[in-house]
Image 1 (cartoon, rainbow, N blue to C red):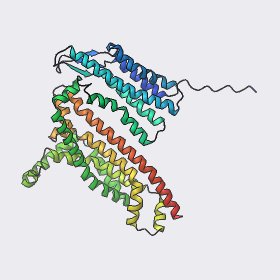
Image 2 (image 1 turned 90 degrees about the vertical axis):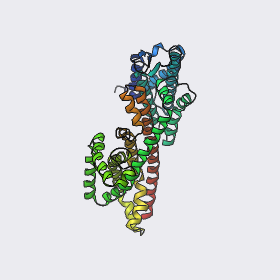
Image 3 (image 1 turned 90 degrees about the horizontal axis):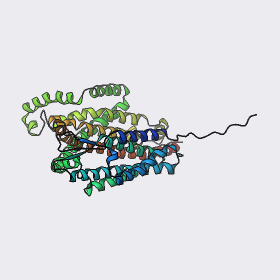
Image 4 (image 1 turned 180 degrees about the vertical axis):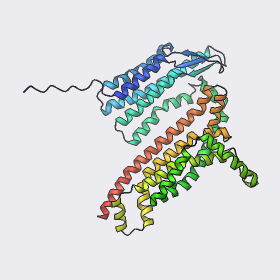
Length: 404
């Protein structure tokens, strides 16, 4: 018999990392990292990455090389953690380089000049963030460690903003000119989201419980809520304007309380209608997924159906319920921006002001906080759902064992 040929490990150990590294390199060398213009109304000239000072390039080069080499290294926990660290360092060095170049360009131009973040910057930032998230997930770190590592990766960015290193970027100049308006818009945005969340919980949770007990009614309810999801948000706002205006005219007290065809009331009603589907569906699915053996064990212990619901089904359904709440909040935060079109305010008002004025950095001033809010909500609720899922599994095992 011929001896078996040795099995050689593949050259590429992490194909997603290699693809993201190539994506990052294409953004770095084919797209501008900045755009510099004499004022906000004129298209700026592109500033390529290679035109930055050698110090800035050197800061980015070291972590970038490790990101590229990481695809060929053995995928051990230590190497994956090193790749995640390199991604975090690259994000910080990229922001530092952009801020330093904006300061240098601003010192040579008038006060009206604007240095905006270019398409290459956003491509590199997106690729580095994806590499960071993928490496932390592959490293097998527990959920709290991944969350803390993700937050820690952006601490240098927060410090650079706090110490004014990024003040010469156009988006930060827009913030400086509208700080009071921005803070008010953030508060208005949160009011819209919380105002829609409360009725969503008050209506959606009981409907979910009812749907889990009566599957036929639950299917019809979910079908009706699914139809609402097909209506465009702007169209739904428009459909609510006429009846709410008529209601305010018929009952002046409601109009005095703020229930009118425009403003906060139609925004909250529309967002509530959109958010009911994930809340009802996840509540019903979570309650329906309770293991039959656990329920039988609870009945054998003498618990009533009401006690089984609150002491067994609800605790075991919490992870799925939190997943629905995560989707609901993320959807509300995003759709609340559109509510600015009917006078509800929020960060959407800054976004649309920038669109109408053809000011991209003003659009970013409204859009970036929305993205940050959604990412924060997603990370926190994923962590909470994962922790509860582990606890629920332990609880189900204990209950089943008690039933035996």
